Length: 200
Picture (tube, rainbow, N blue to C red):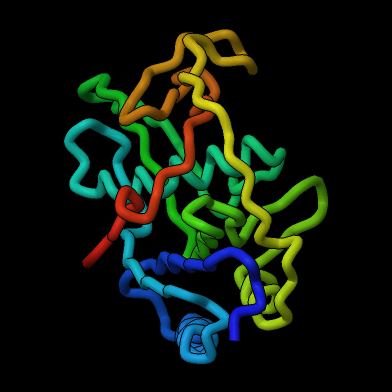
């Protein structure tokens, strides 16, 4: 039985073509927690290991999911880079600039009453909470790990706060061409109907 006062929804994002262990074990545990009503709703999504950050990307829903996770991390002074990384490269032949997002092997987004309450893995300073830590928190009903709070809306800044270069805005993500920093601003957490459903 779910003893939380808020409805818990877990979205698990998994790299396609990844060796099954320990992913299968984690997924099996999540299914067990859903069957026991510890989790109210569980959804599994596949995403590629790298995604081009461009207006023409076929993985816009995965980029949207990353954007929400990055906003959550910024709002709570956590980091999700790594396991995510954003890199900008320029071709020596065409002078074309390409920005890519590398995704983690597995990532959990936990929603409490329709608001993003936690992301696993994440880090702060030298500390780190892994996917296994997130699953353990669900198993032990660690309520503090899944407290949701609404956040105000704000647009990404025009310039990079690290190197003062101009930011290129791609799908709501501000990418610095000078130091690869990303800026998202803050936006209201979206309800379940607006959350991504990444498929193969």
